[in-house]
Length: 174
Image 1 (cartoon, rainbow, N blue to C red):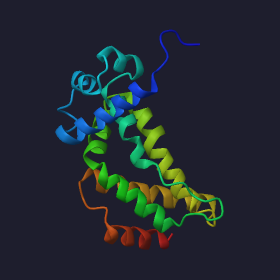
Image 2: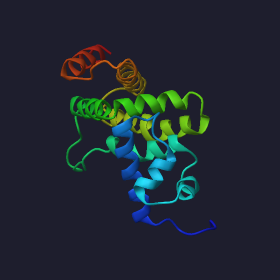
Image 3: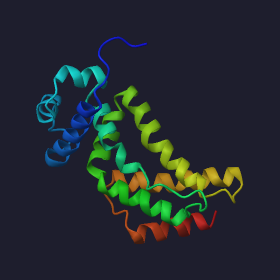
Image 4: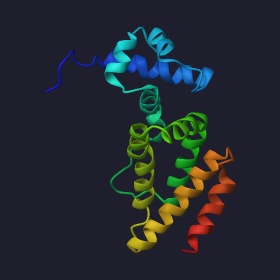
C-alpha cells in the first residue's frame, strides 16, 4: 500500500496532454516540468510524485503512439501492415523518440522504461506476425526489422513505403 493521496486521473490526463503539446511545440530539450505543470494546472510536486523525471513523463505521454487499433481475434495482422504501422507511428513521434533514446543512454531507469514501454512491445507485435517461422528465424527477423527501423529513426531517414518494401524484401530472404 502506498502512502499519500491517490492519483487523480483527470490531473494525470491533463499533465500528459500538456506534456505532449509542449514537447511538440517547443521540442524535448526546451520544455521544463515547471511549464508542464503550469499548462496542466497541476503542481510541479505532483509531477515528481508520479514520475521520476522529465524523460519518464515524456515517455508516458508519448506511449500512445505505439498503441495499435484493437485487433479482431479472428485475424492475425500481417507483417507488412504491422511494419507500416510501426513506421507511421515512429515517424509521427520521431523527434521525441530521438530525444528519449539519447537521454536513455545516460539514465538507466529511463533506458529500462524505454525498453519495456516501446522497444519490446514493438518486437512482440512483429513476432506475433511470424508464427509460421522457426523460433530462431523469428528472432532474427524481429531483430533485423527493429534494427532497421530504429537506425533510420536515429538518422532521421524516412520510414516510408519505399523503406517498408525494402525491409520486407530483406527479411523475405531469411
